[in-house]
Length: 168
Image (cartoon, rainbow, N blue to C red; front, side, top):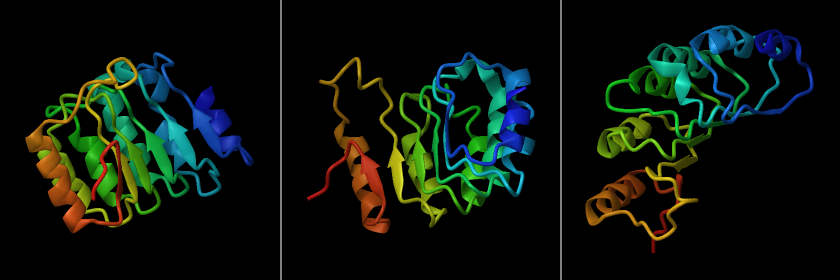
């Protein structure tokens, strides 16, 4: 099992599990594996594993809550939406080590609520919240309302880098 490998690992620092078609049973042991005190993995990319479903997102929320080594996590294209994002974001609020979150291609996320939520975690230094697949549509832009939300966020958290947004 992958979770046993993660638990027993003493040298791996980055783990890219992008688009592995995980389902909830595949990741239900991840929170335990990633919460081991000697877990050394600092970068985890679980992007494009939307097949984990709502129960799998709860497990990812537990992983984020309990982990003490991660400094970045990728959750692009995970079908996070207004109905299922709370376990993940409760983990974000509680985690004290993760500095960088990638949440691109999750168009169902309520941008205003997410930005307000992220303000509550003072450890965040970098976020990506582009709701569309920018590799397929390079011409799409944020609308004025979205840009205003980002500007307000930037005024409250000027040290946080928001990928894809540039401020004067």
